[in-house]
Length: 162
Image (cartoon, helix red, strand yellow):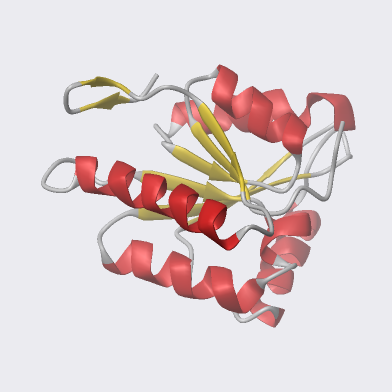
């Protein structure tokens, strides 16, 4: 679990829904998490591409840019159903991010290889390896795997169930 001032952060899945009060409360929880890290080491945020960034690129662009400006790391972590990821597939994802206007909003692009039923665990292995604190992903299986590993997972719109 990520260490924070005064103890450990419990795993949470924040499903941002249609109720404005609920959305505000969950965003305030994220703001509180970021405040706990102020003055300490920078946080690593991971954001999914397919179904997340490509759904609301302008809104997430502003968030990602603000996080980077505040000194945090923002990595795009997306999955591939293929058993290996080559340069051409990685470049296609990088091109997709550029087409969405997100080329300058992240520090690293990582494409984890499938098969589909292993992507959640492979994302978690990567997130742990870089010390990530937060995952933003539309796939609830990825969010559950992240919270089981002690990360904060935000599911801004649940478009994929397992």
